[in-house]
Each structure stands twice: as C-alpha cells, then as structure tokens.
Length: 264
Image 1 (cartoon, rainbow, N blue to C red):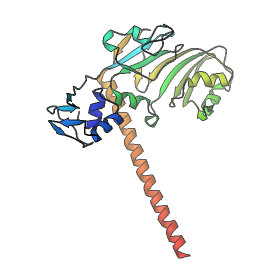
Image 2 (tube, helix red, strand yellow):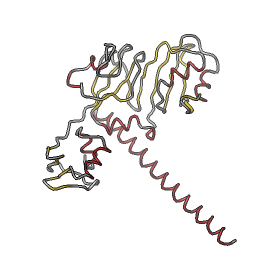
Image 3 (tube, rainbow, N blue to C red):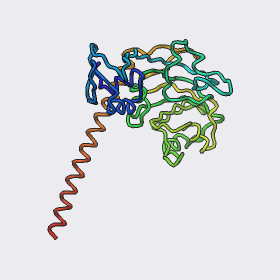
Image 4 (cartoon, rainbow, N blue to C red):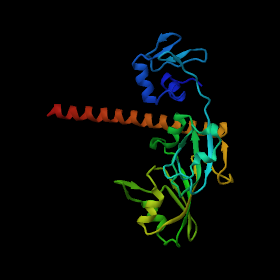
C-alpha cells in the first residue's frame, strides 16, 4: 500500500511521524541518491530511501493479540522484578509496543504491534474506538449504579463516563468506554463506593478476546487489521468534513456580521 515518506520512515522504526518530518525538512533523507524534502512523496518498492546515508529497510508489520493475566505488568523491565507481558511472548516479539496499557491487576485483551500508525488508530481519542470490559464488583450493585456510570464523574478535571453499561448479575457488569482516562472504570466505581474485584478487557474496537486462554497470544488476521484501518479512516474523513463545514459556517456568519456593522 502506498504511503507518504514520513509514514514510511516511521513504520521502519527510524523516528516518530513528527520526527520523520524533521528529518525530511532538514535534508537528511535521500531517494535514489537525491535529497527529498517533499512530505507528500510516496516511495515505490523500487526506490532506495536513505537517512544520513543509511538505507532504510521497511519492517514487516506485526500484530499480536495477548490475553494478559492479572499480575503481569505492561513494561519490558520492571524495577520490582515483577512478571511482565513480554515474559509471555516469544523473543521475536520483544520489540513490539503494547497498545492501551492494562494495569497489573487487570487482565484480558492487549494488542502489541510495531505499526505506529495502527497503534495510533486504536488509541487516539478522535477515532473513538470502543473498549469493552467485564467487571466483577466486591458487592451487589445499587439500583442506580448503571445510570451513575453513564452520567459520569469528574476525574482529572474531565467528565469521565461510560458509553454503554449492561448488568449481567447483581455483581457483574459489561462496561463500554470511548475515553482513555487512566484506570477509568476502577476510579469511577470507587467514587460510587464500589471496588472492582476483577476487571477484564474483552473487546477493543472489532477485536474480540473470545476463548483465547489466559497468558496465550495469537496473530491478528488481515481482516481484523483491515477493519480497524478502514473504520478509523472513515472517522478521519468525517471529522475533516465536519471541520470544513464548521469553517464555512464561521466564514458565513462573520461575513453577515460584518455587513450588519457596515450598514450602521
């Protein structure tokens, strides 16, 4: 799939997208021996792209879904020598970055990848990718708990709320989030006097945990990756269209306001 030069460099692990822009602007990038400062240039498979004289090799994108058990931390090296998620994976996956951290006590679906663009599509707020959790409470829920979760509370100066809440039993819920606030469900429940005894992420967008055993992993299918990419691309186009319409509306309103002022 064709991609712009900055994304090409980012996907090869040379730099972040912004860092790649700086390398291009600074004249550090050559294509077939000639400096290239064109941010929109899309390298062909036959092109030789170099950064400071070193040939850039495109990495094979990898996408892994792990069922993280409780007690494992999302880090490569833990100063407290706790077990990490990388202890559960083959050595060849040690360079993959996890997407959407789960705290040590939480378990369930965790994605790891070397595709920074894919990771951003899963986590950036503008894409509104849903995250679904199954939660076990320390005691039976009150009758109004679901509505209180939907109304939300203030966390870190922001209104934190659930998008959907479904009660499964007196102590178990399915909760869907779109926001990415740290430890959001646990903190919201604590505000209402409850404690999450067990918290499992079961879905991230179209990616579903299903019956993958704890501590095991599987590769994402081409279809799963494609659905995320296509849905978030549609979201981006819709947002750009909305912003464009908003700019037109603002222009029209300012024009009319100016006409009114001039007439007086």
